[in-house]
Length: 275
Figure 1 (spheres, one colour):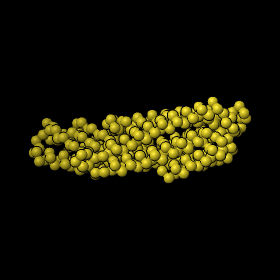
Figure 2 (cartoon, rainbow, N blue to C red):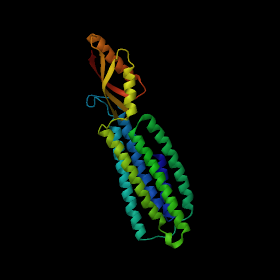
Figure 3 (tube, rainbow, N blue to C red):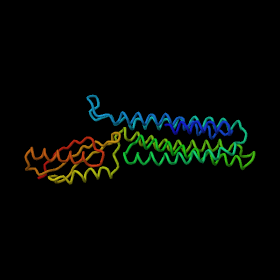
């Protein structure tokens, strides 16, 4: 949040004094990214709360909800930037200052580093909100790169290309919208209980199948809630076992899944007899 706020201030100053709207548009996105980062932070704090009487399965859905709102902010940003870019194209301004190119190089480097750092954490924790946040940084890097190209063309092309930075801002909006759709799809999928990746389901099955006494597996349903996975699994055991023995196997399956490095926080095991 601090980095985005600082970048927004630098971009606004560079855009105003460097006479380029592409940089101001880039600053608008960074400013909204501050709010988006706050949403991610707040959403993850709520998602980390333990289950209670009102939320027996925990508060994990707060995390993709934050990602959903963050994706919406991406579309708002694109709309604002596009409308102002069109206005600037219809009412041309003077040539941008060459020093804005140096500023943009620094911005791109910072944003790419932030993208990689946040993406690594998002991947390691399977966090939808952090994944959206990482793509916010990537979108910002892309808009800055587009602004760089547009300003360079405006500086080198003379009077005929003086509005190239505004066209670059429009192009950046298209890229941002595409990324926004991708973010929205991921967040919506989690809210709607979309299937987890096959490899996650296979890992859950492998852990359960390795428990002594498990003869086979039937259904295995895994859904994501925040950075956690909730598992509903059917296990087949020897049909001649006592109820207590079957109960013990069910507990062993549950304990094995909870202790495995899969982020499982809830397990429901159904025992089926195998003749």
